[in-house]
Length: 105
Image 1 (cartoon, one colour):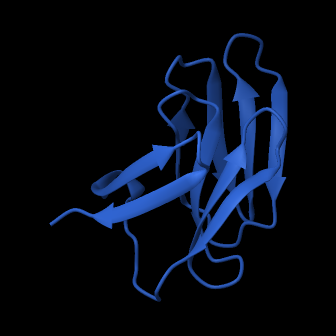
Image 2 (cartoon, rainbow, N blue to C red; image 1 turned 90 degrees about the vertical axis):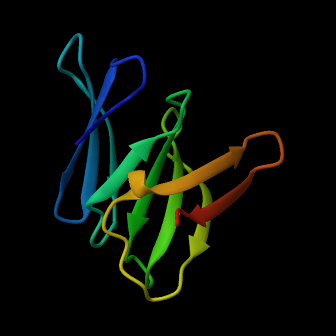
């Protein structure tokens, strides 16, 4: 479960899906399908993107556009377990579309 920074959107996971809900109206906003093992996810600092640790095609970080539902970027990862995305320092440069992931020591 994750809330957008403004608490307007709630993201909830179910097997192979993440559903976005409007917290004011209770209406479903969007469903992201095909996300095997997507138990770790978080919003970017602006709430425009959902960053997901998934096993869709091996371990990877998938960045989704919250408004359109489209994939922004997929980053394959080495086969190491990620137990919590919040323990990873994630720097996102939206202008270039580049995502850098650095593990905290």
